[in-house]
Image (cartoon, rainbow, N blue to C red):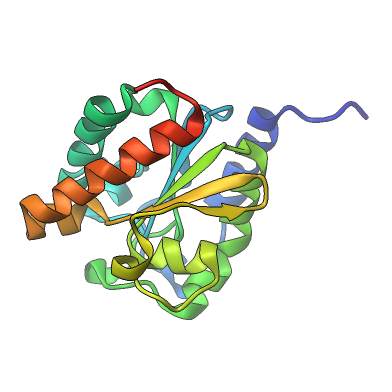
Amino acid sequence: MPPMVPGTRLAELAAEAAGCTRCPLAATRTQVVFGVGDPGADLMFVGEAPGRDEDLQGVPFVGRSGQLLDRLLAEEVGLGREAVYIANVVKCRPPDNRDPKPDEIAACRPYLEEQVALIAPKVVVTLGNFATRLLLDTDQGITKLRGRSYPVGATQLVPTFHPAAALRGGGVVLAQMRADLVRAKQLTGRTP
């Protein structure tokens, strides 16, 4: 059998996730929010979990946080969302946008790990505590971890705040996110 191209296996994995019932979130979701973007991207973003807008549309980061992410991506990295890959730790919306529970994260972890392996980005930008803690296997928070990059296999991981934190926290958090995205851009080899 010939080797599968990443986009093909990614489509198969998305189809598998669409029917997932590994955790209780399956009962309350509108649809699985698997991921979107270029399966050959050098830059991947990983957030926490879908919100209401994402659950309805089936696409990650389409609400206010997504609009801010798109703007920062264009302004600091010079790319549109179609040129990167965007996913979440948890593929189904937690009720009332609550934080994902450990069993929900564990249920979705194999999907995320395979997404990262298939895409094989040069840089993964984690958006917030849940993605950062999971992918760095740490209990330290984003405030201590952001501001530098971490090697994870052949990939560099750049932790930054979730866009929702910038929407709530204002200019300081936004400036820190911008700096983190510039760092991610430099690590991909894109010129400033």
